[in-house]
View 1 (cartoon, rainbow, N blue to C red):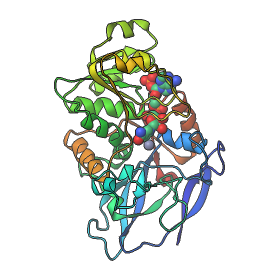
View 2: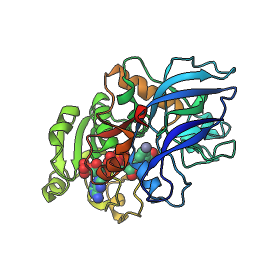
View 3: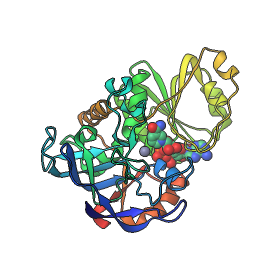
Length: 346
Ligand code: NAP
Ligand code: ZN
């Protein structure tokens, strides 16, 4: 075991503070990663506040990890010391179920092992990326392409893949009108990726405050959902809406924006149920779906795609001492567009 520095929430809703945690010894197929940057996902906040149900404390959040391999186990074949790598939302899965075999490890029938707030195969709690080092099996470690700086690559490991996977699955591309609902950490990656895939991109945001940014990142249109005219103008016009909204939302008015056979795909994970009138999907044969992160191979594909297209995330780099303030700003939709912790400050 190695003792390393970390930032942890000691209990639900308590401010995060500096502490130390134990990392397991580097096993046969493990890599030891010297973490350089860790993104702050809204999921970190939901979990640190126990908004999704009972959680494990102390909690070291962080599932947008970018760093450099510092040591490899004797059986490791995919990585060498010095490689630039990333870790996302899961660090293991059963590897045997149909989903794992199909590269859908995020939907592992036995449940994947989350990067934090989970129990590893060794029976110990998992601790995430707000830390200086982590030990991860090579099969759940991603390669960060040379063209991407580690700081802007970190948020791709969750925000990037969470948008890439549904946009690919629902065929966002040329000739498709795609809306991204919520212009936050996930949403801004949705704009970049949908644009790079060739879709016509609309942002649906609460206000027009971030309109200039949205257009710069690749949106063709930008509407405020606080303006009732938005819902008149866009009625029946969209092929796909991906919602990244972190709070409960009435779905009916958004489903009305879809064309016949359009799909509303939810990736936002609010703590409370949402309301829906089923007539909203009956008329127009609409699909209401959800999507969770992406598989390991697909995550690698997403990293390569972003590098080819020359973009990472838009970030605000912070020191570890600023984490609690950053949490407050994320909760008030005041982030452009992802806080990333410089782990050298832990
Ligand atoms: P974020 O940066 O806080 O972005 C969420 C955006 O939602 C905000 O920027 C805001 O956009 C909009 N929003 C927030 N409150 C709202 C409200 N009351 N009404 C309408 N819109 C509101 O959060 P994030 O890190 O992108 O994460 C978004 C959600 O996705 C979280 O619930 C997170 O847990 C979840 N998530 C899911 C997955 C998955 O695999 N499915 C993966 C990662 C995260 P505007 O300011 O533009 O209105
Ligand atoms: Zn996340």
